[in-house]
Length: 259
Image 1 (tube, rainbow, N blue to C red):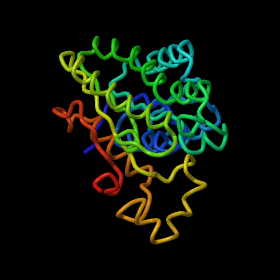
Image 2: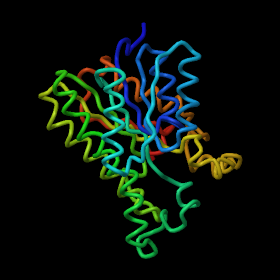
Image 3: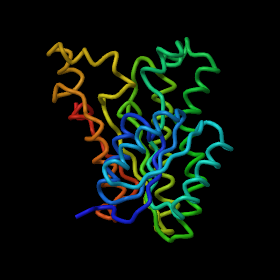
Image 4: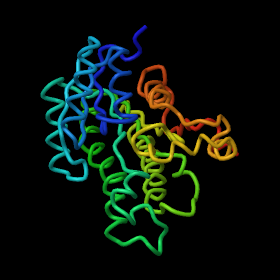
């Protein structure tokens, strides 16, 4: 059974990592998928992957920190497919952003206002920009599902990356607010909170799992999640199988947050 057959799914950050895994997985499960992201070459690659496998896909390149570009990309999705049934917000920055732009993954006293703003714009503002445009469309349709991908580091404090943890914690509570406000319109809103996931974002620290002691500290399962393992959680929450799941937080972390 194809769990999202006939649905139209918009996936931000769809060109890489978890978003790319969602593009391929939702397409295999019968959906038409539309990726939004900053890098056109990555979007072209994932659209080609989906198409080669027999799926239907589209994409729009956009900087999701800029409202006008978000609006154009959502219009492009609607022009191509006519509706939006599921929104997956996978776009965001993390560990690798701190390497690309030093200072963005610091603790408070060494984080500049500019660096704080960059992380918030990518991780939180982008989610608001898509939701504010997609929710009215879902209201017209009488149904919809929003899945926002946060992080287990938005569930508790850590000793660095304060802008990151704040942005992900805010995303969790923002999603809860969406859940209680728009359920009456048939729109469900839920959060997926992954632990360390084997993507480009953390590629430079994946060797930590080579040390059994460190690996055990990072996850009781002593490995990172695969992008597909997180995508499966998104698929469940996006599909009608989760028809009474609203305002939930689903951790995909191998038991890390259970400690």
